[in-house]
Image 1 (tube, one colour):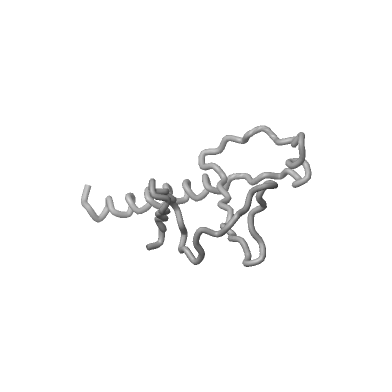
Image 2 (cartoon, rainbow, N blue to C red; image 1 turned 90 degrees about the vertical axis):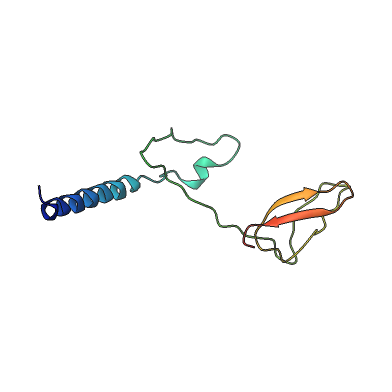
Length: 105
């Protein structure tokens, strides 16, 4: 078979594969009211297995200048560093120094 005749078939195969992947990605999302999934006894639906799972990534939101984490009685929370650009790894050296690795540097 000449190359010119095989080329359109390969394009058609790639197009069909791409369309199949797009359709597989159109999975279901949760149809449960928020109140039913919270509290001491949440009523969750059974898992729904799909070819490609639905993934929702939460947006990272930092603390404001006036807000911060709550410490239990007798403890105090203080900022170790401010203005870091995506800190990922924290390592404490034996002498008490702290090393922080940033992912966007």
